[in-house]
Image (cartoon, rainbow over all chains, first blue to last red; front, side):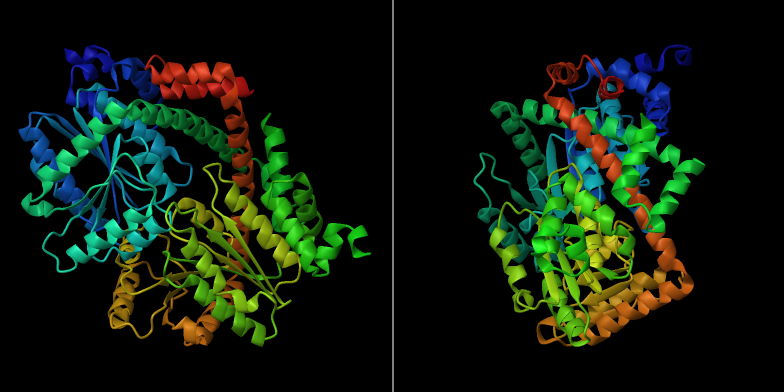
Length: 313
Length: 313
């Protein structure tokens, strides 16, 4: 009976159910989940981790679906982690996106998982990295992390990737402006996913214009066009991702990038735990009284924070 | 000599230089700055705090300029805090935005300050709130907080506002998608700042369509159009802001909102300090060794975080 053997052992053999179970544990912040990650961690670092970001509607799921198909044809195993925003408007639309991946649901070489964005405690980036590590350990050659938007939480997730791809569609004026203003970090690859749209060429020129203003880098960010629903341009995109990875590996920056990411991850994990401990104090009547003083303008926020921290130690 | 008197005292009298000095202290995280905030805090809570957000290029600075002009004509004093992203591309463009406020630079009833976004330590939201409190204490009737984008840092800043206004321009497809997907929180007022653009009407309809899908709220988010460079529609915008404030005051939600914001602020201040303490440890050779173990895949990130926290206590 395989279930009698340790979860970590089964996961390392690529057992799907073991992987699914371990991710659930990590997502629920179950200590057993961290145990599994701890056990398999020495076996990680092999997968190519690609982070895909972009506004909702940019066609990220379709791109991931097309890339998955291509990687499978190349004989590679794929893990996908999609981060779903919790919309007050249309849960349906987001779930609809997932359906575009459905042709891969039954393929044993593809493992798909989605997580909903959570509250402000910042546990998501933590769970996302742990999940990427588990997929890596389970033998996925490619791990795709898909997130929406340009918020800090998304950036934290994307930061775990070796290669960051930004998906834009014609009309993504805000994203281009955000890129230009430095609100959004410069990705490694940019893809405009509506090859046939009349505004696509203008858009590509505009993006190249913005990029040309930036500092000269050894890696020139390619701007590609795809029509992912028909698989067009997807091979070029996969090539660009491979080339970027080869580039940073040759330059020694893959090592450096991973070092920086892991270092940030450790700090982030520590901060999340500290914040959680602070939040747990909020139910304490004494802390409630402290906050009341702030609301009544008798105690300023910074002094209240100091008092809160004094309690902590 | 006024400079012999305490900074807080002079600030409460509306002394500009005292206000400027206090903000610099707060921005530099000088303990004296917190002292001033502590001293003036009981006198705060009077100003109407408006947060304006939106992608770069949406015309936020022009809108703030026009609103400032209007408020001055109404006999109100205005404080403006602009958060500038640090762009790798065009510092010039952002500084150019500031110039749109230049007609108010010499008006003693207007106080303008800008801050650059900083690193990941999260000190910006902290400094921004302290600055808003100082402007409030110095007698500004209106405090405008201007930030770019929809990242968490920006949301944290905007969260200090009584009323949040989202500025969009025709072509802001990404922002509308972000709103729809729940990546962006629903603002209190939406303004499309290109009245004459051929796509403006379509855009307004689109936004109303998205809003109509949402949960029914007591406050119906108005969608306005302006041409701020000519002052058109700005009166309606100011009216909408006033109405929103009157609404939340009547409903009792102004109190509730401020309570929630101050509570979050205390937690955020405490978290920032804890994170800073963690960062200070990074130079420690022992911690460096710990991180090395993680990079070499001998120690997993979560265990390293635990060890880091153990050192802390």
